[in-house]
Length: 224
Image (cartoon, helix red, strand yellow):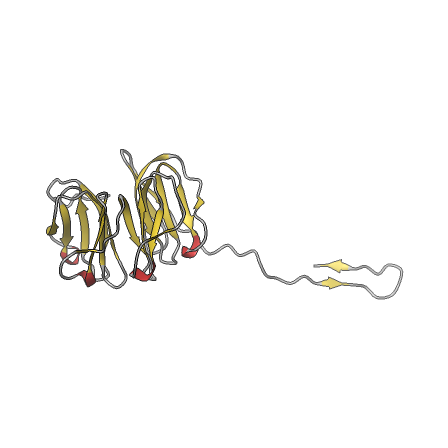
């Protein structure tokens, strides 16, 4: 079972784990909190009564935090201050890919990507959903989940997002584990697991052999 950690009651929102094992969480209308090396209490490291909604740790240790009040902040390599990178939008959620790409969404807007963690966030042309959780699996597949809708997947970080046929629920949070499985929360409701598939579908390949008999009469050709 999930065990309570005895933290102060706050409006906790998204969480992320950095490569060094530090755990981060944002609190709506409060600030950014950190649990050093995954143990002890969460302590405030960036104050501010902003509408924080998302946080993500990049592979290089950069920590991204975002909210619905037109801002995305970055803490370089998990040290020092959080600095605004000047992005505007009512941001909902953040996720980091293994290659360093950073993803976020705007509510009923679009999915945005900051390629390699450099430059501006660029719209991917996926619009009109009630976006909630975002996650990227270790193989680079990108997922978002829709409150009152479905789960969508972009294979390998390229191409279209495709609906995965999940039951319509009030989906909220989304996270990927190291095997590629996905955890999702429903508010109010339960926690759901979509386990990673065993192996990769591959229907290509193989040999087609045509054998023809010689001579006349009862000779037969075979296909194997």
